Length: 189
Image (spheres, rainbow, N blue to C red):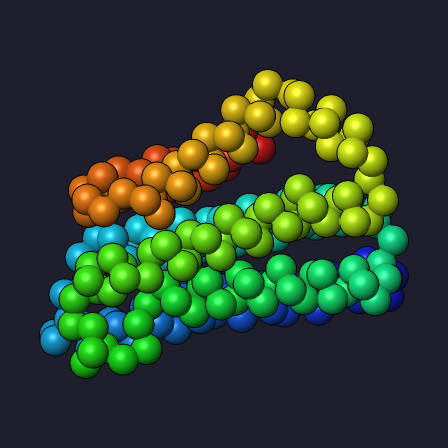
């Protein structure tokens, strides 16, 4: 097993737990759906986080294969995956009796989820390459590509809007656009 395969099995395990956390929450909600008002916001947030995780996992696979794996890098990877797991664990409430309306739960926790996802992405794709030896100049070259700058800029703008906007329909639209951006990746590949 190569150093990268060792690292990615560790990293992937924690990211996989993030996916399982969301899916398990929905399974529990389906079993008790008679007493819940699920609405659209929490499922859209869950779908966004799942699509972001899938994109994140694929991007990490591509980006990290050529990086030297060190103990510091393992700790950085653990930190990033832990932030993702914490975010995923906040998507669906643990106590359905305390949150019979998932929309109310969404209003209270969306900012934490979105900040965690954005933080994990920023650490993994903007900061980690610099820590692994990629030059700042190489990062600037990547950022100078119009398609990359537009996509990442739009991602951060929409994520910030979800965090700041309080109107539920606006959040539905913003999350739908973010999900649509990931959907476009399916056809671009």
